[in-house]
Amino acid sequence: MIDSSFIERVRQIVGAAGVLTDAGDIDPYVRDWRGNYIGKTAVVVRPANTEEVAAVVKLCAQTHTPIVPQGGNTGMVGGGVPDTSGDAIVLSLKRMTRIREIDLANNAMTVDAGCILQTIQNAALENDRYFPLSLAAEGSCTIGGNLSTNAGGTAVLRFGNARDLVLGIEAVTPDGRIWNGLKALRKDNTGYDLKHLLMGAEGTLGIITGAVLKLYPKPQRTCTALVAVPSPRASVQLLATIRGAMGDRLTGFELMSRVCVDHVITHFPSTAEPFEQRHDWQVLVELTDTLKDAQLEDALATSLEPAFESGLAEDAVIASSESQASALWGIREHIPEAEKARGKSVKHDISVPISRIAEFIERGDAALNAAFPNAQVICFGHIGDGNLHYNLSFPGATPSVEQTHAANSIVYALLDELGGSISAEHGLGQMKRDEITRHKGEVELDMMRAIKRALDPHGIMNPGKVL
Ligand code: FAD
Ligand code: MLT
Ligand code: ZN
Image (cartoon, rainbow, N blue to C red; front, side, top):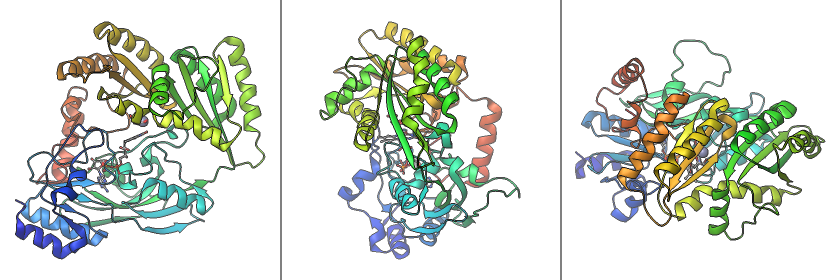
């Protein structure tokens, strides 16, 4: 029970600056970005360092007070906001923003969990290195949230998900102890790899307070292009063509349907229609190279020639300046905001093997258009790693619970048939906690529950999320 004496004990640990109890101050911490959840809490706790996090968790463990860890609160599945009971505290990592160490010879950076992703990206660039995790929320999401959701973003096809970019983590366990796993080793086979247990656990197995991140060579050349293609199937063939020609220089490959471009142009009037003609499908392609004189534009143009001859590509704009490149990326990155501005949609964050993604779109479109003739499929995302945001919007209306469930069932049944995932990068949170039990076998669910019971026997870590 969070009463005034509990809050006083917390205040003693984190100081007045670390405690929010005023309803107005608390409000942004209990609402998720999509506006799907409005939770309740009596107190938002904002520790300044790992020791304070540990002391607060210890107090919560003693009093069996549930904890909702929160970073930038940009999550898409309600994982970072409390339920409406008011029983939990929100523990925000946002005051923990130290970049602890940059070790250039080891290509590693040790950071606090509350560091904003963009701050980390910039710190790497200022040290002639590159931290490749990139997503449209990078200006407000935190690295702790990124690791806890194993975030994806636009560079996964080249660098992997968040968890692939980590050498070690520091965390506070549900009983309030500090686990210092901040090893900066690329090889360390000494027992279970516990960092990979906490990363992707969405705050249900402990609180990530620090991380050792891998750094990469800074790209010296970047080429950004938008290529118009006749269909998703063509985009997958184009992916193979460009990847075959450019190899690991291909660092971004994002599909966008016509509807997405129209929404962005409508809601962000400064966005220009990218081609002379309107096209139903376009792919944003990004190439990078560490060679200063790499002629990426020419190489891309050459690799596109056979694509034009065979009709795989219908048009292409290769950015000739940084501002043109960011304008092209702007179309892609504004899609979620534009979609949100048009009202609620039924959102799916799916993945299937790349070889089956065209089939998924063709069959999904046919089934959804048949079931919901007045709705619009909004299809975009990271097709380069088999991940799509495959949403259904009902122009001028909010999807009903029945429509949402019906659309989910169509999409999820197709995913099961194609060996896909109902959550490629956003996690389960509270939104998909029940759904996942219909898509995972009993063995896997039992193993996950056993781990949860072992590490968090009182169930205080982000209850109601994931499992
Ligand atoms: P929060 O939303 O605060 O929390 C997310 C989850 O992590 C919650 O379950 C929370 O309890 C837990 N958590 C947070 N911090 C910690 C911690 N230190 N220790 C333990 N658990 C913690 N996601 C993608 O993967 N790819 C995208 O391309 C992408 N694009 C996006 C675009 C927009 C415009 C928006 C709004 C979101 C997007 N997201 C994307 C979703 C979101 O940005 C990611 O899930 C991100 O990783 C969440 O980070 P956060 O700091 O906001 O975490
Ligand atoms: C993206 O790729 O833009 C995000 O995952 C956000 C979204 O799904 O809307
Ligand atoms: Zn995404």
